[in-house]
Image (cartoon, rainbow, N blue to C red; front, side, top):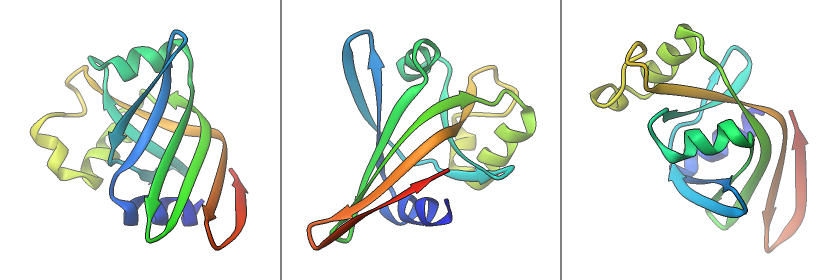
Length: 130
């Protein structure tokens, strides 16, 4: 799991894919945070991605960095604990201009039943489950 978070942080931006009915939706994300032994992402409840994950928690993350890429398939499970939101916002203080732990909008999800696949053109894929 540490290898996954290090890769995503090094990439800076990753892409999160969800389903909107039968239509895939992909958008850039930048938050990835280790809290309580799990990997977390953050969004706002007012966004379409929040509604999509409420209907179908299965999602994929994809990132590319220095000639290698990472795909992570997982269920994204909302953690409604205040301390989870606080931890995320403390890790990404620039978000505090738009979000606060008690605004009713800030939402954090952790990755459950995750499978991460590291790949490149030059080597065999490496799979990590967490």
